[in-house]
Structure formats: structure tokens, C-alpha cells
Length: 178
Image (cartoon, rainbow, N blue to C red; front, top):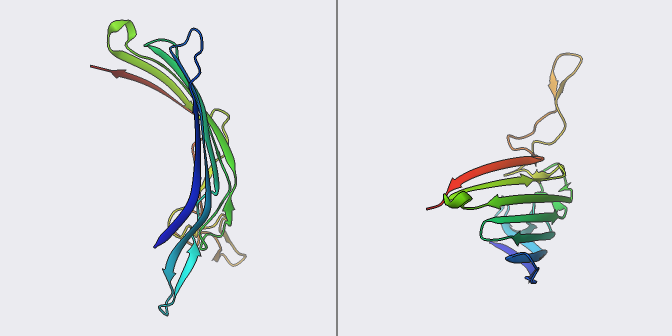
């Protein structure tokens, strides 16, 4: 049984901006106040354990504008707070990070139904390390051979302790709307 208690706050503004069909500014903040999971040990005793890998604080924000029925652009960002990892992970927490993404789009090019968009994620190439999955017990210390040629240390699990996420990426899309 899992229990997560938190708060979500959101704000969306749509002011009129001369020359634009629409304009939006928005932000969402999430605070996780409590997160626990009921576990059972080998003796059958029940206990509560903190749910790992949940960031206690998250902020999502953005702005979007539509010039007309065809052209639009958006900019969005995320600030994700540090997260304590699961107890089996030798890395105790992941660090806070911020990413910013942008996109431009043009729909119905020359009345053809074709659309084209260009999006860029992680514009500033922030290093993002998410917590590993399952026991995430592999660790981050590479193994080595001792003076006798015996392998020492290294991975303690099949599941990575940290999962690096992509840096700056771009995507060009072409589609047909009917």
C-alpha cells in the first residue's frame, strides 16, 4: 500500500497581445509532503518505508503564442528538485536540475494540410541524472583488477543507480492533416 500526500498549484494567464491570435503564460508547482509504502520484512513484520525517487518539489512553466491559424511557438521549462533514492541505491540522492525546451510550428503550409515543426529539448544541455529502476544497486564506482589479477568492486546489480537523460536534442517533424 502506497500513500503520497502533496499539493499542486497552477496558474494560467491568457492576456490579449496585439498582433497575436493567442498568448498563454502558465506555471505548475508540485510539493510532495509525505510519501511512504507499506512493506513486510522476512519475519512478516509490517513497516512503512519512504518511497524513493520522488522529487519533493517540481516546477513546470511555459509561454506559448499563436500568430495566426498557422504559426505558433512555445517555450517551456522544468525545475525538478533533488530526490532521495531507494534504500538499496548506493547513490543517496539525485541533484536538482532545470531544463528549457522550445518549439516552433507551422500548420497547413500553402493550404496543403502539411505541417512542419522544429523542437529543441534541453536547450542549455543540462546534465540530468534520474534515479535508477528496481533496486538501482549497481553503484557508480567502476571495477578494477588487483595486483593478483582478481576483479574487485564494480557493479553490485544489473540495475543502474543513475540513468543519464539526453542532453540537447532537436526534432524536425513533418505531418499531413486531413
